[in-house]
Length: 346
Image 1: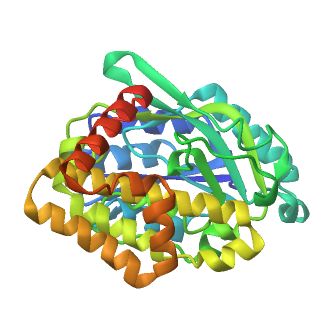
Image 2: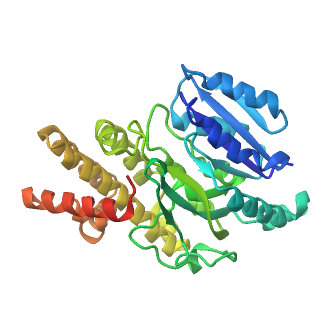
């Protein structure tokens, strides 16, 4: 039995993917590692094959035409045999001690592999992640102690409140594979920022959550070509806008609110954060075209769901990033710069 499937989407990752893969191998035969070579043109394919040859019971190398990060996530989910599914980007890695604790707890829940225990296991594991500016020797851990009880099963109606700096990202989540498949989540190809959709659409299908206060995932920051790099994000702003709109439209929040009001509140705030990011970077571009895109983005939200639009526009964080006039734009950018410095997210 494979308790966890790790999918590692790789594109021209030869210079750093070994660190990632080696960190996952400590799970031994209890896990499977699917290395998705997404049409790389460097030595990524050879390295993937090398690991498959050395660890045939753990590692599977999959070679495909380039389709982007989302395509790799989709392919891994299609092939996954593990009870749980987690994506680890090829430039990131897991902390070895935290990883051992997580795997041990998963095995406890699963009764050592006995199928009759599977119905009582969490739908979602949540762990801390670490912003790791490895080249600068700086880190910042993001935890959820105020949101979830530690190492106790809970549901959406018993959680606490998220702070402004807290949101559930792909790096903090490990879903049951069956939950992801039930949710129907499928990420668009050739598009960046699709991890936002992955960490959002399945949430209403989750009934039980288990939080471990461990710094599991190291999220590397510092490469000039990273999608979260400010200059790169500005160049790919159309993709960010697209994903923002996909997130806003993929779940009926009115229905979610009937069953899980706290979750509906969080999911609304999540859309607000994504709109804020898109709005801010359109402001940073400082062109008439970018300003028109900002108006159009908000207009499409309004056309899709007017009630959601007014809530986002006037009641949440995103409204503060859509302030009128030049002064409003300057205030928005100043606030963004301050938050980036404090939270070190870029």
